[in-house]
Every structure is written in structure tokens, then in C-alpha cells.
Length: 348
Image (cartoon, rainbow, N blue to C red; front, top):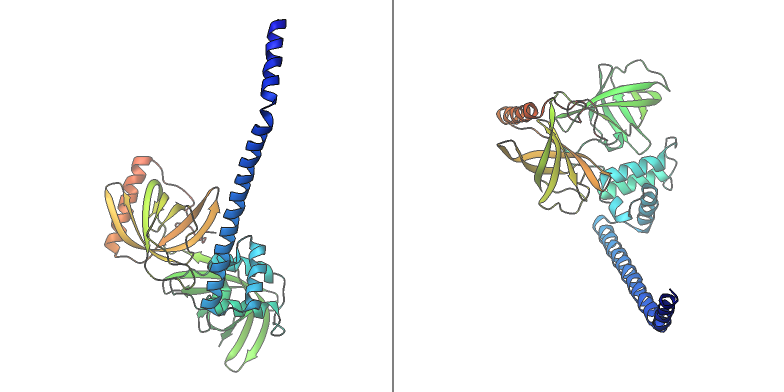
């Protein structure tokens, strides 16, 4: 036993002389790793700064616009260049920043005016017809609406309120909640619930000043069963998006699917409002270039969940897709309940 302890002591004695070199090697490796991480962070920062500068030039943004974008982005927890190209992030951040403010805006330096100016410069005030309605702040003057069966028309919109002109307005009082129905993009119906801020007489009848609805309800006119369908969905852009970087041909993981749309998983967010051509297989049926609008794309775990709504298609093709889903459902058992495509709620 004494001999064993002596051998251990001698080994430690021999290696002790080599420890400084080993420690120095480990320290050097750690330093190199740290430098590599810092270099990577610097490259990413320069890339984002360059992208932000290019976006500023493209949209004519000045220093005040960029300062506002940085403040809004910090509140939303995203980078400024990401905020400027993602409509969903822009709407969430601006809704949070303007929450609790009372109309009307009180001057050019008012936060609401600055947000409106930034919206206009980004093109988020003139969205493509197929884009989903994420906020009533996206409404355009001239949009036809109905309240309690009374037709009206959006007269003006700012970031804090919008005005609707009625020839025969429903009987409402300030402080009440009014439900508005409208057809958006010629095919999607929405229901808005807005607080009545003011009721004013106008030459053509009555003007209602309404607070914004930051989560319009997308009303589905048809219900479709959906089914879990692991697989792949490939997509390509059909139309350019106003501010998003060009969407390239990509592949998403299918989570579930119906004749009305699909839930997919992607590594990066899909452009909300983007119009895509989607291709996928259901059983032994192949569907190519199905028109799909991105309604939502949100982080869930380590990936993004994207809600796609299929657009108009020939009834025969819709029937073929519904039949393929039904056959897949029969093979798997009962259909899923509570889907983004067979309920009245827009995906959030």
C-alpha cells in the first residue's frame, strides 16, 4: 500500500511540471473560442446594420423613423430590420406602443403620427388584396362595412381610431361596443368589435368614430375536417410582398391539413400575408401549386408554426382534396377537433 501511494505521489510530481503548459493550452483554446464567438456576433451585427441601412434607403426612412423602429423592435423583442419587414411583428409592436392613448392625435410629434408615417413609408397602409386583416388600422378609406344591418363606409383611418360614415347609423352611444362586418379581399369575411368613441352628425347622415380592433375575427363560411398528416409541403412565392425579402422555393413540414388549409412547421418565420403556391401529397393524391395565404407564423418551441389558408380553387379540385383528407381520416380514425380552418377564429 505504501508503494502504491509513493507511485501516485511520483506521478503527480512528474505531471505537475506539465500543468502550466496544459493550463495555457486550455486558456488559449477558450480565448480562441471567445474570439470566434465575438467575431460571429460582430458579423451578424454588421449584417443586420447593413440590411437596416438598405431598408432605410429603399423606403426613404430618416433618422427619426429608424429611432422609432429601434424602440418598437426592443418592445417586441426583435431586431429593427426584422420589424420593418414583418407585418405581424409591426402590428404587435405598434399596438403595444399605442395602447392606452386617446384620439385624436395632437400634432406631428405625437407617437401615433410617427407610427402612421412609418406605416406609410413601409407600405403597410396599402397591403395586397389577399393579405389577412391583422388590425383595423390596416383598413383603407372606402372599405364597405355593416353595423347591425346598417351599411357604412370607412371614411378615414389613423393609428388611434377610424371613422365610419352611415346614411342611417344604428342607435349607439359613446362608450358602447359596436360589431362591424366586412368583406376583405373579396373572399374573406371579418367581424370587428370596436368601442364607440364619438357619434357625430354629418351632411350624409352620421359619422361614428371607433377605436381599433387589434384582433379582427376571421369568419369562415365553410367547415372542413382536418387530419394529422406528417409529410412535406413545398412552396414558392406567387406575388412579391411589399417589404419582405424575396421568398425562395422552400420546404415545410406538414403537421395537419384540411381542404381549407394546412398547419406547417418551418425553421424560419413565413411572411404573414404572403401568397404562396403550395404542393403536397395526401395519400396517393398529389396536389400542385395550390394558392395559399400565410395567415400566421409564430415561434413554437424550436420552430415556427405557420397557418396557411388555401385560396379559391375549382370546386372539383376542392372536392378531390376533401375526399383525399376524408380517406386519410378514415385510415387514422376520428378527425381532429378545433382547427384553424373549421372554426370562426383567425389563427393567432
